[in-house]
Length: 271
Image 1 (cartoon, helix red, strand yellow):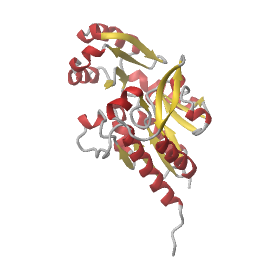
Image 2 (tube, rainbow, N blue to C red; image 1 turned 60 degrees about the vertical axis):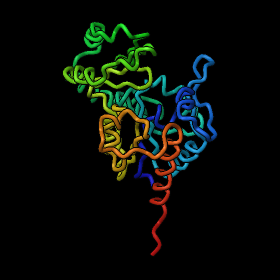
Image 3 (spheres, rainbow, N blue to C red; image 1 turned 90 degrees about the horizontal axis):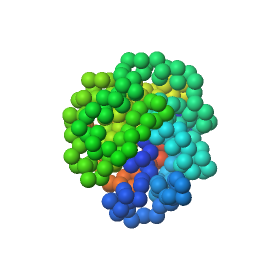
């Protein structure tokens, strides 16, 4: 049955850094799925991987990530084993179809980005904020948005509520994920890209999952949404129901639940 999809965020939802593995003391087996310059970066549990393979067979598995396309392509699992036909990268700024950007969606995003402060102006404005003194490195993602890699010792001092209001006034979203402080134009929206695919693929039902503020619409607007109990999004939306588990075990819980539901829907009813 190809009219059901699982559209899920990746980092801190389905895949985890070594730091997150240590923080939540995962007990199960997992494997390395991303390496950069011979340095291991990300892992996925064997259980989650098996569930995703079942989902991929039963319906559509659509990775939805804030990663750029280049960063997404580093995840070997999605290049070699589970090869999703569609993927959303750059926080909704790009939809990949068989690894190539959909030009129709690119044009829509370009038009919507005219509504908010340009990246160059936002970068200048951020440099004048007090938080700029706590930044280790600044990165621009495909010219679409910005993220600041913060110094560890200042993470607990970041005035997130103030920054979110400041960003809101300029048409931007602010989200802290690990050591990365993201500034993203509102038109770059994960659910907007998934909604486009829902119409394009004539999807009848979409499961959504994510952990950050940037995933809020994806979780809320999906027919059924999941948020891991460690997720930032739960701090700003108390109406969302968290998983029982945290860390990589939350990924197991989410993926297993979706796989079970999709495989049940796939089976014909007995009369």
